[in-house]
Length: 255
Image (tube, rainbow, N blue to C red):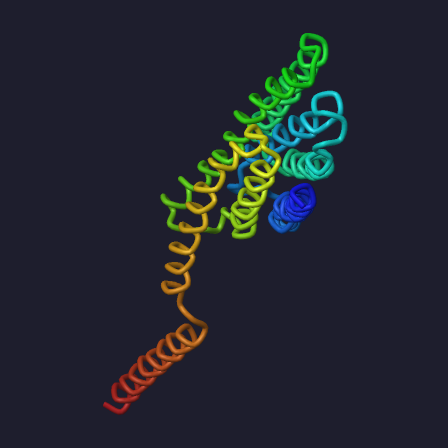
């Protein structure tokens, strides 16, 4: 019963994580249409890539016991493909300064993952120590992934606008944290559960900010009816001024 429940939570967690990794598709479709990255940051996607690389390696038979963490491998494998696609699109449309910054950070992330994979394979000779080593680095990386949107959170608070903090990204981040926390606890694997103890409150924070500032924008934004009324009033005022000028000229001519 316990294994079936763990597998069920893992499958649902996979579905939720897939939606989380796919959520930026809407954001990058805008980037492609506008042919500009505007104020969007690539850092969250690079950090997410590092997280996917590490946990795909963590779930592989080299680190874990056979395929005990197969759901972890599948979803992070898909995550790697999606995050690489987003980073490529960002590099294509970003300005030169943004391209250099993103390229340097992405290169560092890939090098660090390669070093981690080599050390875990050739230095440690049993699954337990490999899991502890890779899992600890993955824990630090997961905390960074969940903290990366804080850059956007700061921008939301300063601008009081949620334009650059997509709702679906925040929502699925929260949902994924809940599900993988449950999966880690059911698996008695604290290295899988621990990162989500950080991701859960950060997801709640993002959703709270979205509700607060999205409501403010909707209440402060003028409606189409208000704009039409203002335009009609301005038009009437212009007509009155025009009539007054014409009447004044006619009086002068008759005098």
